Image 1 (cartoon, rainbow, N blue to C red):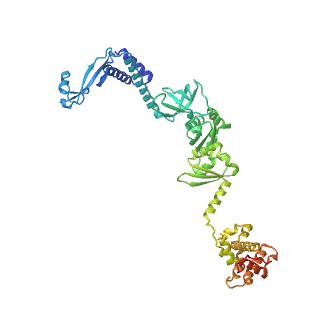
Image 2 (cartoon, one colour):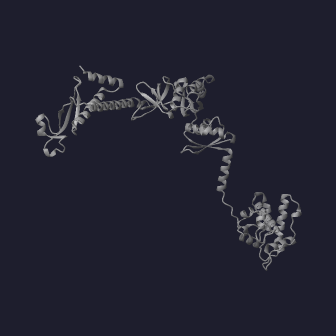
Image 3 (cartoon, one colour):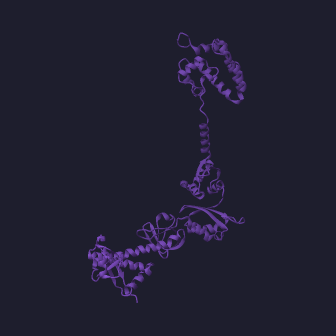
Length: 499
């Protein structure tokens, strides 16, 4: 017949859901600590509870060695000769149990210490039991009852244990009352130092999946499959579904007649918005669906290995595609498992222009390649820091006139020469370019009149092409005057303009 003490231990074990031997071991450890404190000994102590009588005995345990030289610590070791005085059957390596009286040693302080040890051991055993019970049930939906609210945390009773739901696992739309029953997800199981080790969640995507399985028979029987879920609790959920039966509309089955099925789930989630999307294996098509309600212009796969997409939308659809605080595109990226870059048509156009400009080699045409610019004028421009046609074309008439030796008529000549040069680069100006090339002669040893003749012909040709009156023709005298202005007097005095 079991003693009264052992019956109490069994009752505590049933209440806590732990093995009675664990409580027995806790009691024995408590007696060992109290005995060591009483005897102030460093011996290796051991206690044993007699199940029948309820008596707890304490022993000092010493290991048997062969010779006195092998005894390193007299509190822990004893020679074979000394040990056989107490027990003739002992052998080398055995253990000698030396009784230590325990009657009357448990004073008030020792009893308090023993109580703390027992409670600690029981709590540790209880946590281990809860951990082993629920570690394999992570992600499972369980029915729970609100037991109490501790600050931001809500404590649930889930049957054999308590579960804690921290603030980050709660939906901002929900509030809880003590005694309320609801469904929660076992998010994880922790071996915490104190408090419940089971962490529950109402923000996990598994909760939405379970609700759809409960409300939609086609999902329950496998006709419609949930392929992906992305959720921001209290805000919005996107769920991708696929039908295995071509006669069954996956989205329609989840919505239900007049939206009854999805509305039931929305009520359970306290008004959280739900987008139901048809799943596609093609990421481009799936991305277009996932970004609804925004209308997508085009989707481009940037890197299939890194799963990177670029989505271009109309300028008016950009804010809708991104969503409030980026929520729509963030959920779409979670749903696809791809990185998504969203750009408007205008942003994409500017990006393409910049890329083309970067790819085009920088134009650096020397001034000598421009027909109509004499050597003296080229030297003046180079002395002013203008060495290319492109930089010359960017200058204003005022900037040109600020250069020493260049007047208004020379500015006109420069403008005409630059315009003719760029016009000759266009495909439609091939004939004009041929005419100009025929009229070119070496600049050295040629009179001013001969040098001005092809320039006048070019001016007349360009005026005819542009439909301007023939008043643009240059006379030999004006050409000679410009040439005089270009080269300047030989004595180095200031150039003069001849009208």
